[in-house]
Length: 465
Ligand SMILES: Cc1cc2nc3c(=O)[nH]c(=O)nc-3n(C[C@H](O)[C@H](O)[C@H](O)COP(=O)(O)OP(=O)(O)OC[C@H]3O[C@@H](n4cnc5c(N)ncnc54)[C@H](O)[C@@H]3O)c2cc1C
Image 1 (cartoon, rainbow, N blue to C red):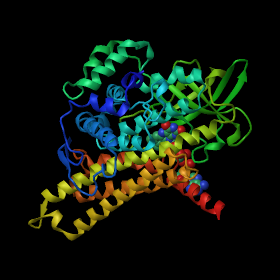
Image 2 (image 1 turned 120 degrees about the vertical axis):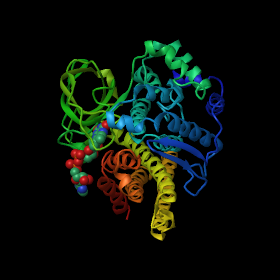
Image 3 (image 1 turned 90 degrees about the vertical axis):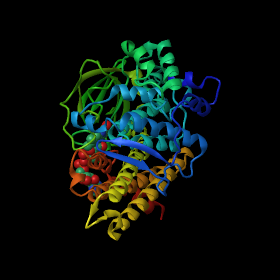
Image 4 (image 1 turned 30 degrees about the horizontal axis):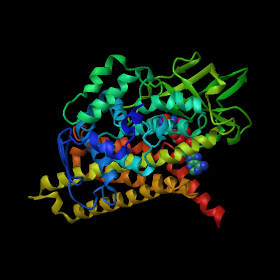
């Protein structure tokens, strides 16, 4: 119950700030990081991600940037090359309240807004896109159960997903969060983690919609859930599931009724349920710090009480989850683009050809100007979409699609241009720009491809004219 403890009788933001007051003071405009061979600085420039944020939002951002700098950036290349899923680091992020950022507070969520979640995911992504992107999927799962699940399901799953570990840890978890929040800056690894390591049981979530035969046309899914007394019997398989095999809580979209979206329901399947198995770990271009596997159901019996919402509501729940998911993924692209620009500027100032720094070529200057303009424009649309979701605007789903389309396309382009500015060095795995580019590429494909985003946007235009 991480966040119940954090908040207690006081305001979350002020306690959050209290917990991090021992962090080394950095201005929000200036920080220094180290990834691989490149040291980079975020200068006070127009790409400053804190522009326009409130004081509380700047504090959340500052904590996330510090975490990115200290604990993600130094490891991101190693995790990529060794395909490591950094579960301990993810648990520490949950300890800071980032496991269920926009789930309600009564069962351990942090109760923050979508805009604040976007700011946090963007900041964390400057340190590792792939790890942050997984965290964003976990957050989507926690929110879906919190928003649509029965009180019993909320009570059972949300606290565990918020802390990313089993609630059997109980009191020790609370102590761990307290220790981590108050002494985070001074001691690594965190004292609470050392104290509780022997007690920990992971609780990580996965979102299971895609199937081998249904990707973009998700409503045609064919995994079935047939009622048998007080159980559903699941048969079928899901493809490309992030966290698949390693994770514990799977929210699975299944067919309980007619063809099309209205015959789909969402059920929770826990790891260890007989009839649940996993495919081989996929080999990927990027997103290597999180496993991706097929999730297979063979006469898998799941209690009817594990249904999230009601029968036939599953597709709507899945799409509601994706609205926020699209903002989150777009935010991860913003962080990658931000880090890539900082590194490109640094490289352009230092690298000399024809007896002068690359930065003195007008071509390089114009390229950097275009990259910065693309980043700031992408951030504006992502934050506008996040605000629309916070305000429950009827236009929110379309704005989320626009934000995902625009930001993931443009930020990928920014990462690619940053690689180009690095010349041959950009193509070497010693330099992080190539990893930001590889990790960002998949954002144009998943949580609805960018072609599907265009379908959603054009449908909105055509049906209202
Ligand atoms: C690393 C990774 C992690 C993933 N994680 C998850 C996860 O955790 N959970 C999950 O459920 N899914 C996940 N996915 C799946 C992802 O959401 C799908 O890959 C995506 O929705 C596209 O489906 P598809 O791959 O079947 O492509 P297809 O649907 O076969 O599309 C192929 C191409 O055709 C285009 N296309 C299709 N239909 C149209 C149309 N009507 N008009 C125009 N163009 C069209 C598409 O845009 C695309 O370019 C993940 C995928 C990857 C690669």
